[in-house]
Image (cartoon, rainbow, N blue to C red; front, side, top):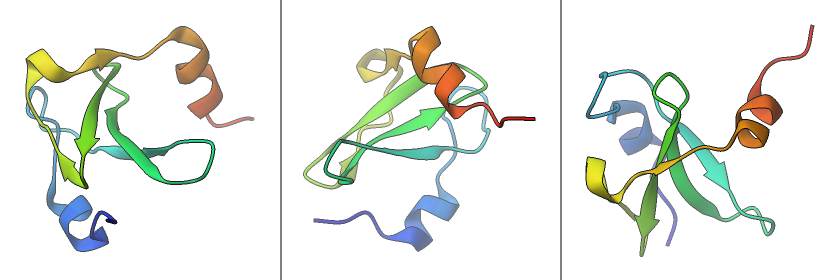
Length: 71
């Protein structure tokens, strides 16, 4: 099951109301929605985002550095 891109454009971080970024696994399947401002990622379960603070995980420094744009 895939996350609808229209839905993704409407969803925001429940903590800061900022934009979310879709993170994919090694096989390029949607895995999590990440808020780079808060440095957290919300899981996708059966294609449904779980937007609860208690379900979010902290992003590692390596994940954050990999997402930063290169100059």
